Length: 67
Image (cartoon, rainbow, N blue to C red; front, side, top):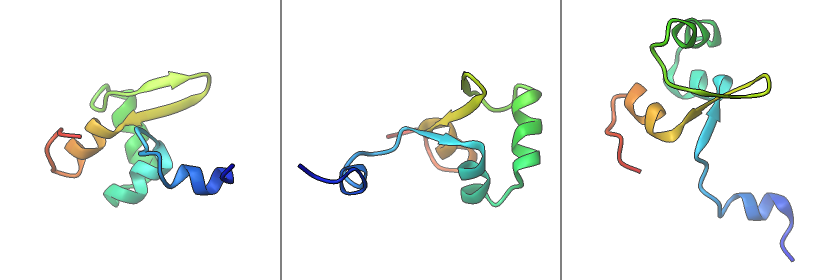
């Protein structure tokens, strides 16, 4: 059986945290959270966690929404 860190490298990530989106886009976490609050970025909440799907992240960085 593979270790969990080896398995995670084969599974494509579908959702990203605010910190990850900030890192990829070059924006601050505060600006991402402000956009979330204004409804400019679609997201889901699981408990206190805010997650942004890959399609939305691709749109934010100027790409297309293809997977």
